[in-house]
Length: 114
Image (cartoon, rainbow, N blue to C red; front, side, top):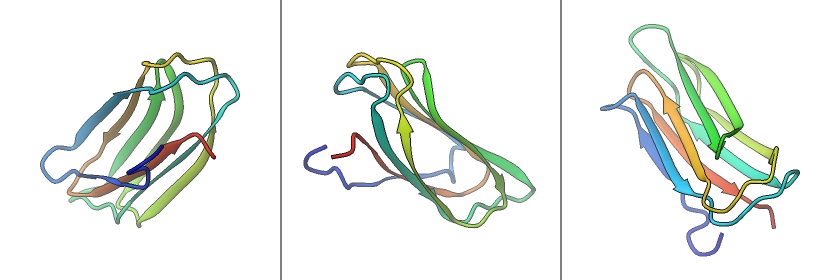
């Protein structure tokens, strides 16, 4: 929300093949609330066939996860997520990415729709 809401976080996996990003939930969510989620990756490559995996959790709740084959063409994912339970402010928002190869990932949005 607010200034910088349309900024993109880019993760390049050329040096390290996994990362977990975390920040506290800025305000509480209610069961049934919706969230806008979007991310994408460029063409996924590696020296041999492999898989990439990314997951979005808030607190103990998995809101989105996807396994992608490597190699794979560039793809974008934009989803409306439904919050499965009440979640208190301060719960950790985590995005975990596990990947093989020198690939580029962009995390664009996790927001309450206006």
